[in-house]
Amino acid sequence: MQLPTWVWIATLGGIALVIALDFYLVARNPRDPSFRESLVSVVFYVGLAVLFGLGVWVFAGPAFGGEFFAGWITEYSLSVDNLFVFVLIMGRFGVPREYRQKVLIVGVVLALVLRAVFIALGAQAIARFDWMFYLFGAFLIFTAWKMLRQQASDGPEVPENAVLRGVKRVLPTSSSYEGARLTTVVHGRRVVTPMLMVMVAVGTTDLLFAVDSIPAIFGLTQEAYLVLTANAFALMGLRQLFFLIGGLLDRLVHLAKGLAVILAFIGVKLILEALHHHGVGWAPEIPILLSLGVILVVLVITTIASLMASRSGTALAEPSEGADS
Image (cartoon, rainbow, N blue to C red; front, side, top):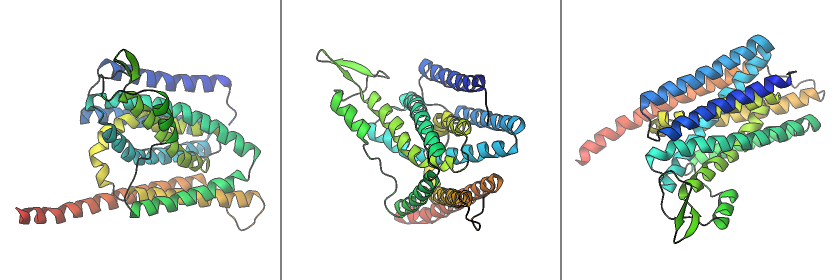
């Protein structure tokens, strides 16, 4: 895609404007949003992404439009998996419910900035070293295998990453929250509150997820513009999605398996296309519309299977509860 500079400026400005408005609304009235409010917001952000994708389809062609939709749907699906960990982080830090929106919006901004750097580095690496496709493909297949193993064991964990440990060592932290403030004064000394710690935890933990998701989207498109916008649209609605499906996360019991299948598929796709590029005749190029179809089918099957399994589990649990009483 040959894009003039003004398109990049307008796109980045539009993303910044939407996030700034979101931040203003959260800061003005911190609270635990209702289901209806969260649903309207999620529909708005999904609609925004669909309109953007259709614009890419019309002005840049169906190939690039398909790449955006495949990348956005993949990133959005992986973001849902991120919510499992965000729920654990919120619980671990004991964040008051009325301030969770602010934590998430700041975490999203931090994640966007860090992902932009990661995307720029990834785009440069791919442009200069085409063997990176083999590395990305192998990494995604390994990640899929690791996700399946984790699903079979104890479930998601929240490791305390190096950035959070470093911040804790450098900055003295109070033991309690002071509303939504990031700093407070204890015994005449300025210290940070747990609010700052949880924001760092959410933002940097999302970056750890980006180590998986960024190679995945580069397996669907090598256009830095589409990679960046797909990530931005996936992250922008993450705060509202957290409150919309927070209570349903436990019911998506097969989500990790579906995401593992998607990552493994993209990893194989990357390796096959790299082999095709290097003259291996039997290695096919997988069309982007086929990739988009596989992603959608896997997500639909995963969601249906999860809801059916959850419903069966609930039906089995009810008689036992009645028997105990």
